[in-house]
Image (cartoon, rainbow, N blue to C red; front, side):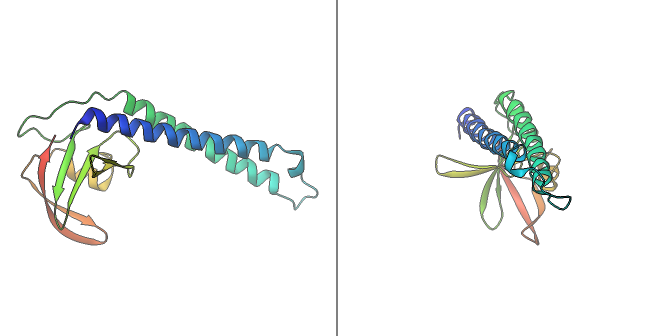
Length: 158
């Protein structure tokens, strides 16, 4: 799998998410400051609730912008045979089924499809990421997925 294309696809996905979050934050901010949301009495909290939501969305936009910047700063590199997985590695893991994971700096859970194959981003700080970091092709890894524990084999580290 072409890691340059994978990174470009992930960056595009994160750019789209950031744009959507920013648009929602702006709309919510406008709602919070709207004259229509001015409190009519001490029990009317519509404006306050909208401002809390706008604040949360602005924090989400900040997180998304940081994730995007970190992915834009990644340089795709190939991993040599026997080299352990670390940030930027693309791992193929086989258990009941075959799954591809990309060890990314942020945006864990982001999933993209490239060349008909699904790739999920996992971070080194996530439970799954912690178990994959430092492993090499051929290693067996006990993973807790979907509430059940099973042994998976790392087919490749690219």
